[in-house]
Image (tube, rainbow, N blue to C red; front, side, top):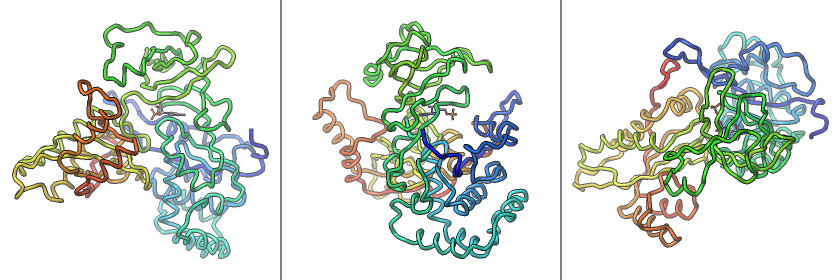
Length: 461
Ligand code: AMP
């Protein structure tokens, strides 16, 4: 689809995550960590179409700062050879751009002097980079010149002028990042090549250069036994789930119908039996007899910044746990909703709270509300906390306290647009611009989590 990719390199930001053990003692890790640590990857034969700027030592370094720093440095050193930039998800590539914004001075210093930042302490990584790093004042000057400008529009093509496209997943929850990627890349094509999970590889995009909104993944029938649970989108959004009352028959791979939505169910070689992945897909067509799907969304996920997937129940528990701290102020949370704010990288969760304050002389102060932010973070799942602590892919959680009556206004707005008063439910996550504007115009104070929540690789929960 893209000519000449064998004439240069790919700048891919690839990372390993920490491993955990299951209570039964088995090793548990995300699929890509498993792949990068395998001999398939480490001793892959030379392939001119897949030459990366990042050395294996950088990809395999468990420290996310050292890994990102050296991958960026190598990408800058090879800037004229880079023909494509990528990461697994769009969020990862934007994190790399943010990293460059924060670290270009030190990177330029290393290029100028030919000496490596002392924060790179991993011995094999240091040894590998020091071998290739030579003083290059011209390149250092160029990086300083570009990065010190206030305007970063098109920075990707300014620094890597031969880039033909960006290789990142921008379907599903990642679609929120498309405008920012377009801004930094000057509108380069976006290629979404694969649809996969840690449990199973699902499918490929056979038309990788198509527009993000048109991406369909062709299921590879040999990867697992695929079945499909019919999904009625309208019933789900109204809050009724008839599928729980009378389980509909599972549909086989070859029997799905174009235009219909299904939930993916897999039986894998590794032993999962009729496992509900949680993804909702719509059939768009067939490649031979293999169906092709548009990824609609992940079921029940409210908030997602990176690989975190927070559902309604988790958010509810987090709000409950945090609101205990309001008791000493004789206050409580009357209503809440949330939003994944990705305007600034790393993105962060914003939770809007309307409070009931019984004693206005003792209303919750900034300290208490900051502690509420942290208490919410402590209650969220381990993937969220790993993103906060180890990967720096998620910023501190924010509580925005809104004026009394704001949620009633929200209901009035929904009813004015046709919602039924009987069945109105406060949306626990909002993305619709007029609603966001309404909420933001009623904010009385904003508070951020003052510290990192607890997370360690040993803790699986
Ligand atoms: P994980 O279990 O962390 O490996 O994540 C797998 C999940 O990520 C899938 O079940 C999807 O919800 C999501 N995902 C993976 N690939 C894609 C894609 N191409 N487009 C949208 N979502 C994806």
